[in-house]
Length: 164
Length: 252
Image (cartoon, rainbow over the protein chains, first blue to last red):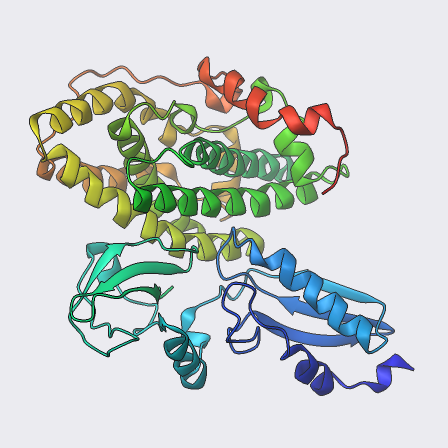
């Protein structure tokens, strides 16, 4: 009975779940939701964490169960996978624009950046005034996935979504 | 020793080191020298504890006795822990915390880089995940090595004292035994001699640029492979395990 709901429909349904820390983008846009499959009567949802210790994963798992229960899917298995390792490269341009509009500077470069270790300067733009005259306050911001910056022109502090 | 037993031991070494150093860092919560550093250390602590959860969870699966990662973290005694001695050393002042983290971060940077090509798929996946995070940890501690080592006379002195105190714990990071031999043969774990070369080539120039000296003594403390720890681990476990032991099986 429940298996008349296709995996495409479930994807559509789960796109209504926002990231608990960044509610302007959903778990598909962020690349956390990896797969949905039917195994008999059981719906298996595969998710991957952004960071090893991301405390949002439990909330996301609960949200998935609630969402599926609403459409009558009771048997749900949520699998947490670590491979392929999550990367900011999975965030598409549309989602990046949503981040920017929300006040978070989106990840600018590929995660495969050797300059990371040496702290090479990147060309970030202030999400408020688009100035490139910005400076890093701290590599670690309000959550593990963000760094804290300040715009030297408009003086607004802002979060930067780190490339990983 | 079977491959399964060796793998379980090896995972305890990795997972316990992450758990204990993560717990140590979490002790800074609310008392960091500045707000940004408080937040940074707690973010790093979270990475370590997350890594420990995954690795100890896998260790429990490999063991196959029905234990969970929580059982391993909260219901083992001091002599059953296999974390490196450096990870349990007290936070001390900020110089001691930074020096401890730096020496350990360089180690994990090269160790997890090598583990990315482990023939055990789960270990390789977890290593790939963690290595990205470790890259940020190392960048953070390296900056503080320069800032404090090559800072004021007092910060320099504190850093040198920390280096003198902690250097003796770096030797056992590269000790190998039967566990390593079995897993190296299977392509699951790297030869730590190769990690040691990379570690030394990385650590020494940073210490020099931070205007610090590598201590001249040759003594190296060891013991964690056999569960012989410094006196600090018992106190740490007493605190970390107190809630779980007071309310066995509690869920929240």
